[in-house]
Length: 286
Image (cartoon, rainbow, N blue to C red):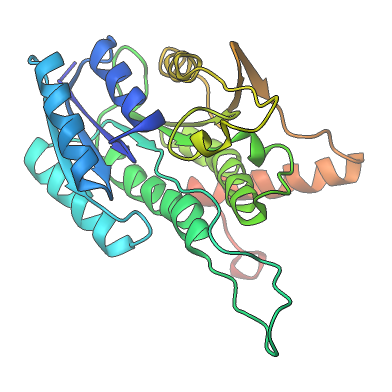
């Protein structure tokens, strides 16, 4: 198996940096890890620490605003050109809630800020799209049978409503839907895609909640354990691992409300598979 390249967005701190260290320690045969982040000071500090701790690997930092397709696409292109391949992509970059959706002051309505959406959802969509493009160029591994793996960082607020941060929870619901919606297509393409959905972790986002009485934090070690479960199970696709305290639970979609709903989605799913395989013909073309 050739030495592999991994990309972690938001890789300079928090969950992203923990994933980077997991990959460096793991048996994923990773030779190079690229950290994409918006914070150059934190990233450069992390880079020095990583290079000292893991001298047998190479690391790179790429200043990247994931909310920009053009910037992300150029960074992926640069990494692929230099490394010759991309095998693992962790779409982890995210920010907390910014602004307010509900404002009543003043004489005119105020346009809601969508930065949280742009980073947490649009940025993840861009990352996944770029990952699929480059991973599809690989040959399937003789060991795992897949061309590469994508892990998205969702949140348990993408499973349950979080009224404190409605735009953030909307974005994370979107990430969950993206992963589930792409599962069959990516499995057909021999690309693994899954998501982790942690409860509150003491990162730059979660640390602000530290002073709230009764708040329970999930150790970042449980998060990396979940990441390891996904990498060690290449047959898993479209799965959401909910992470709380020391527990990792596979969060399933809600049950169908009735048989007709299930039937409709099965029919549309079969249609999608025909389109992917290139054997779909419109009735009018027959």
